[in-house]
Every structure is written in C-alpha cells, then in structure tokens.
Image 1: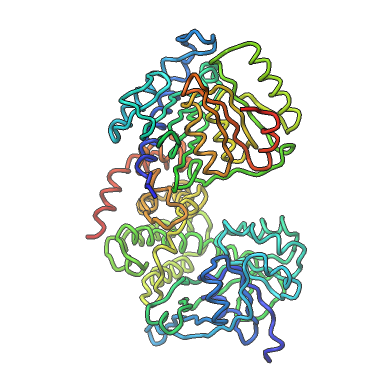
Image 2 (image 1 turned 45 degrees about the vertical axis):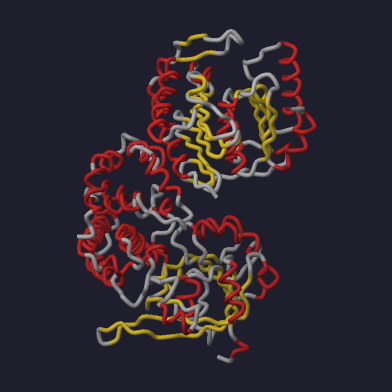
Length: 263
Length: 374
C-alpha cells in the first residue's frame, strides 16, 4: 500500500498555515469582492487570496504535483489520470465575511481522480480534521468515526451551491430540503460543504447532500467521511468536470437519501 | 481451601495487571480464574494452554530474585461471551485500560458482585457505577510495576510468561472483604496512595519511558542507566515531591520514601518493563489533567518550576512508535509549528503560562533531548 504520510503532513501544514491567515484577518473580512457573474453570493475576500497563496507556496516546498485551486485555477500541468492537489483556501466565504465561525480550509490529494488524503481546518473553532488512505482519520488528536443512527434520530445538512444558479432548480432543491427536514431530526444549510462532510465523519450528522458543489469544496470531505465509515455517492456534471452533486450518509440513512435525492 | 470451594474471579484484561499481578493478590489456591481478553492471539494461547506463569521479583538480602506462580485458567472468553456465566461470578476485576472500560457495561449491567477497578484513572468506578447501577464498585491502587512481557528464557519455558514486582494492592474498604492478599484501606488512605501513585509514580515513570524511546532502548531500566536521562527523571520526581508537599500536605517522610522506592523500581533490571507499554497512548497521558500537562500545571500553580517535567512533555510529543494507537502524534508534531501544535493538538491556549513556557523552550529542550545519549 502507498504511504501517504508525507502528503498528509504537507496538507496539515498548509491547511493550518492558511487557517491562521484567515483567522488573523477575520476581523476585517467585510471587504468582499464579487468576482464572478454566476451569483451575487459568489464572493471572495482578500484573505482567500493570501491563504491560497500560502497553501500553494507550502505545497510547492515539498511536492510538484499540479494544484487545482478555487481562486488560482489549475497550477501546473494537470493530468487527471495522475496525481494532483485540490485546494479550497476558504470554504464558507459568506459565513466568514459575516463573522460566522463556520468556515474552513480544505485540501485534498487525488490519485486518478480519487481523493486519498484530506485535511479540513476550521480555525475559528480550532477543529482540524485529517485522514489518509491507510493512515486513519482524526479530529485534532482523536480518532473519529460516523455514528450509524436512524434518519429520524439524526441531523442532516445540505449544500446548495451559488454556482449554476437557476430559480426552478433552486425551488426543486428546497422541496428536497423540506423532505429531508421532515423525515429526520432536521436539516441544516451551514454554508460549508467541507465542514458538513467533516461533521458527518465525526458523528454529528447522519448525512449530507450537495448539489452543484465544486470539487475543491468536497474532495477532502469525501475521503475524510469515507474513512470514518460514511457511504459517499457522487455524480460529476456533464458540462463541468469540477462540478458535482453527491450524497454522503451513514448506512441507516442511505435508503432515505436515495429515495429523496436523484443525483 | 479445597479447589471446589474456590471463589470465581472474572478478570477483564489478561494484560500486565490482570495476568501478571492479580494472581499474587488473589492466589489460585483461593480463586478460580476466568478471563475476558479482546486480543485474539493472546486469548487463543490462554485458552489452549489453560495456564500461564507469572514471575515476581522479590528483594532478598539486598538482591532482586524471582518467585514463580503457575496460574490455571478455567476459561478465557472473547468480550461478550462471559455474559452467560456472569451471575455465578464472585468478584470481577477490571484492568482493560480506561479507554476500554465502557465496552464492558453490557455484560455487567444488573450485577451485584464486587467489582474492583485496577485502572490508572480514579474516575472509572464512578463512570461504571453510573452506567451499570452496581453499588459494589470500588477503586484499587496496585502499587506495583508489571511488565506485559518477559525475558526470552522465560518465554521459552512458557510463552505466556509475564513479570511483576512485589507490591501491595490497596482496595477501598467500602466493599466486603473478598479475601486474598489485598490490603483494604479507608477512602482517605486510598486517596493518599493514589495521589502518590499518580504524581510520584505515573509522571516520572512515563517520562522514563519517553526518554527511553528517544534513546532507542527497549526497557525502562535501560533508560535509567543513562546518566542524563536519570537526571531528568529524578528532576521530575523532585518537582512532583515539591507539589505533593505544598498542595496535598502529605507528610514529607512518606513522600521521600515513596520517591526513593519509585526510582529504585524503575531501575529494576529483572522487571523487563517495556518502554512501548509505559509510553503507550501519549495523548491520554498528555490530557489536560493527566500526568504530564496536568502535573506541569500543578507545579506552576504551586510555585514549583517544572523544568524536568517540561522535558518529559517534549519527549512525549516526539514519541515515535508505528504500532501505537496514537501514532498520529507523529504526523502532527512533524507538520505543525510549535505554537499551532500546542494550541490545536494540546488545547493549550496561547495565554496560558504552560503554553508560553513550552514554546519559549521548544528549541532548547529539543537540543537537550537530542543530547541525552551523553
């Protein structure tokens, strides 16, 4: 089996260094820039840019694999059949900009399109989730695992992206949201897909659903959730290879999400 | 006592205390032994052999010698299999490690027999009581070091050999006396013994193991043979003696006697006390109120400067064992900056004195630890 120790250590180092930047600048995070035209919620802060620069710089000290990053795009020659990094310097930017302590740095290392190392760091709550194939999965110093509860005993979360905004599709998403909410202990929209998956891995959530999320939002969360015992299903958008929809659940909730969500 | 009248003792955990020490406290002539062991390999060996040998180091005429005891086993169960027999058991001893205690509650729920907790955590009886509703659960302090292995020669004679020291098992006299060679004492006396064990034994003992690991030795007594390591261990002992005197008002004569006894037992060459056993699960030992960070915090709160304990803490941070359940400490200490490691992993906030001291001395203490080979 491949040993991912070095990749994991690089990812932890870079995620925490970037998280420290976000945390330091959290007080002046109201300076938002709208950089894309897809949605008025698609914002970026200056801290995103600093954090991303730091991550790329730190990865490059140890590793030359290409990097797919939210703001910088593709750094290096990407061959998806080989290995590469996927980076989101700030998942939950809207939360961050409004001083909601629910945002994270998310870094994954991929092999042939599959995440094998993942790190998610929420600097506001001092929560460091990390895991790698063959090395286990942890939060801070503790091993973590999902808790297999029945849907009616578990809390769920959804992540609807600001990308690919379409009002009819959005209406359908809220119908699904209502269905999940009515058949479970409740359904949340937290604003961070990465943390939803990390919280599923830790046993706080029974499942999560994402529609049109970007790969950098969820790649680290996928491997962390899977290593912790969750079942992750996803479908890549036919027009955008970095856009995907997914369900991630504990076994007892798989049936419910299959019934409600069509990927 | 005739064999048929022996009391049935069920021991959870056939490790160091469960197998090596307990048969000296509750001898097989009075007690019929049943074990529950989750390690498949060890359980199968015990089930197959139906007996094992425990070796006790005793001091005679100033010299350490061995005594041996062959312990017959009636049965060694996998966890959960003991449930059918539980109502016939006279006494239960729990020695599985504090992290694993909750896994026993299913079998012990609704029982009334005495349950003795030989765990390195005084909160375990309270925890168990709250879950299984048995008023007869007490804490015990085995004042002893027990190895979970033995020398190659001993293992040749019996692969299940294990070595223990000679030492007293202090048990809360709240439970009815169940016989054997245990010493039943009041809660106050037990607290005194536990406090001494917690700080004068646990803290320097695990520091000896972490230094031993850095030195690359296999047994604790080998670390004690290295002068610079011994100096740090004795220094940590001295710091804890200062705390006990100031904070717990325990009499100085008892503290001095206890400290000397501990340093001598760490050096016992017959014990073969593995570094990997004593250093196991560093995160548990580094928990905020535990024997390393907790001990250093106690020092600071009583005006004792924990220089040697901080070296022990640093040695624990750098504990490297691929087979340890807490092997992720290696990923974290290698990848994080010192301040981040202390804040995120150790949960020491930057405004705490201990965070600041460990950070200030991070590099200089690393240099000291690198040079302990002499």
